Length: 130
Figure 1: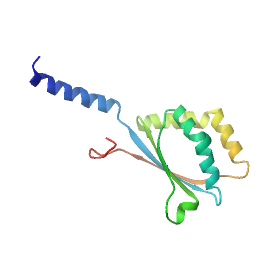
Figure 2: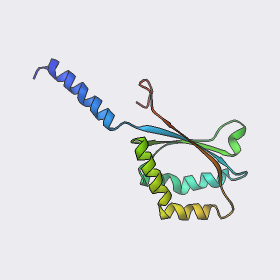
Figure 3: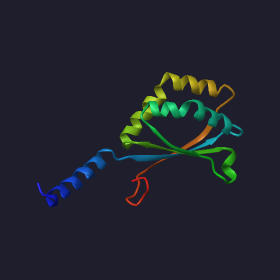
């Protein structure tokens, strides 16, 4: 095979591989009950991130805002193979006996999270994540 024949085949193969491993990102924002952000941070630090990975969710990053929400807001991004995979991962995570135990123990002093917002995102072609 000549190089001029191989190049288009290689490009098609790379494109197919990229589509097979396409990722979607999930941006999640948690608003805590007053005074409960540190309890949420401890739960993520000590348990939740590992349990996400166990159920096929990849931890990308975690942040707190620098504005007036800094005392009660955690923002993070996960990646999933697809939105359908995300749904299956979340279902498995919620049913996990270890998660149920961790949640119950961490909320012994009261509910931690008041509000959860979730947005699924797809990286554009010029994103560093592509």
